[in-house]
Structures are given as structure tokens and as C-alpha cells.
Image 1 (spheres, rainbow over the protein chains, first blue to last red):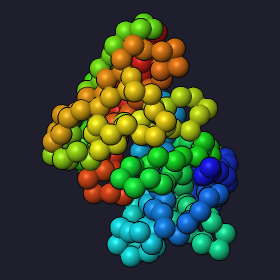
Image 2: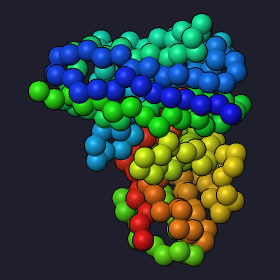
Image 3: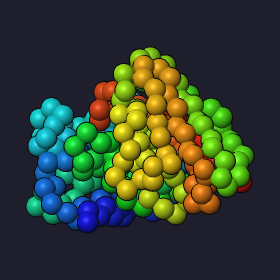
Length: 124
Length: 107
């Protein structure tokens, strides 16, 4: 059974930086697209960033970001460790949220495997 | 960004009832529409993809329909474990996507 486990969430001051990690346990890590989605307290889900796999879209490692985080965020993946990372720079209060890592395992489905999330709190 | 609008925001229902949640897209998204269930402290769960396809392991009381800009999620005969928050999501430009604001189904 595939498992996603997020870590790295913490209390950080505004302007600080943080690295979130997503550990994937399963087969064919390099094939899949990985996505970060967040949920701010009392708010809905917001897509944050994605990184392509060997199965696309586009070339392996293509990155995608929501407009509100462009320039403050880098997503990356490490196939030797089956890990996906989210590097946050210049954190703002509005980045406070539960961050989920998700992927699509079944052909034709969409985001059918999720972790339980890691909490980022930005506060002075 | 494609705006997704869900209604209602909150829905009160009883066990055994049938409920329907509506999701409208700001532009046509064909059938690239998914529904998710969220419960506190649990990983989000995919219920429906491609507007009407039931995800693996999801009970058949859940169903989805629609295309273009109007979509619905129907839960037949609510079970106690169905009380949760539900989100629609468009993914026509996968992996870029956007979600509705959520519908809380409460007792």
C-alpha cells in the first residue's frame, strides 16, 4: 500500500524560511506527479505547487506554482530517496496552514493518495 | 484561475437522507472535475473523478454528474461517517487546479 508522510512543519517568524518534506513509500516514485495543497485555519483547500514525473505532464521535473507563492517557493524531488520537498522563503502570515502532499496513482484518477499533512505556523 | 463555486456552504441532514451538493465552474472544464471528502485529523479522500467516476473503495451511495460548468455530488442514504466537508476541484489544466470553498454536511 502506498503511503505519503509529510514532515517539517514548524512555528516560523515572518520572513523566515522552512523546508517541508514528503516521504513516498511505494513503487515507481519517478513516474508520478507530486502536488502540495494547503488549508489555512477555517479556510478551504488551495493548490500550492506540483512537480512532474516521468509520465508527465511535460518533461520530468517541470514545476508549477500558484501565483501567490511564486518567487518564494521551490518544489523539488529526489528519486534516490523517494522524497519531495517544498522550500519556503520569506514566509508570510497568510502561509499559515496545514500542508498536504498528494499524488495520483491510478490512471485516469486525480489526487487519489494523500498524506495527513504537516502544520506551518507563521507568527512573531 | 478558474473560479469554483459550491453551494450550499452548509447542509443539515439526517442519517438516511439523500443530499446533493452543487459546484459551478467559472468556465467550461469539460468533465475534469473531482470531489473530495475531508474529516478533521484524516487525510483527504478522493470520492469522484472525471465528474462521474467512482474512486476505488468509495461506496456506491456516492455519485457525481455534470459537464461543462455545472456539476453535482449526490450522497444517497447518508451514513453517520458521511458527515464531513466536501470539496469540488477542477483540473482541466492538470496539475494546476483549483477548489471550491467547501460544503459542510452536518447533522
